[in-house]
Length: 258
Ligand code: PXL
Image (cartoon, rainbow, N blue to C red; front, side):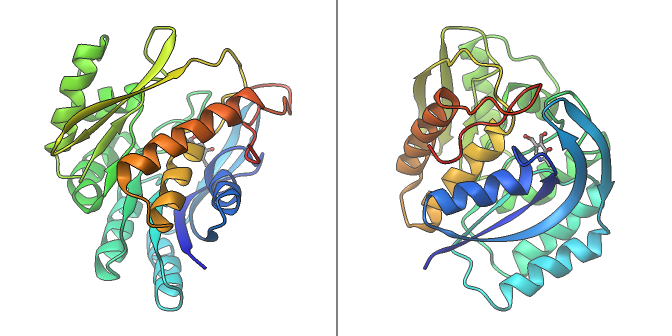
């Protein structure tokens, strides 16, 4: 059995974070382990509270998993603070955990912060160089580069610039860009590839980023090449959005069973 590890926050509502990751790993037939970074009190209407775990204890969880289980791939989600970013980078490096997908989560759907602003630099300097793939959305890429991204052309330049920060590849997600299609750009040292999918008109988009990065991590754990993993994960997310169960009174979850 293949094993994937998620290093991320808990969403009590079950649509995002560690809960989305574990459901997605299960969907791909991959055994899921988890190291929690923070815990949210949350539902589809928003985040009512956030508590960070001590950074050393985040590292301790990763160590416990790594000393016992074969980790075939890992992903990171919400990391909360610069200290947690440091602890995660340290543990990932020490235990040689890879491939590693880094989803640079910064805010929850309603805008509540899930990463301290001063932790963005730690993410760039400490974690990105260890990443096989980083998966920023447009807003995260703007925060990482400190400038707006408005057009596909600017997105392509941004993807190349993020690649220069040291990750093996960059998936710049187009869900937040204008246009009828959701165009994701995959930048690797070989060049930039565009992945196009129809934009699904739905308000049930809670946890889409977590679900996509978890699906990519699961497929990498199964040994798929990166480009194939990205294409298959994106097709899964499109189906998961199309068949969202409509749970809750706000931005509901996607269908992780898709
Ligand atoms: O989708 C980003 C995200 C990641 N992790 C946790 C979250 C969210 C969004 O709400 O709650 C714990």
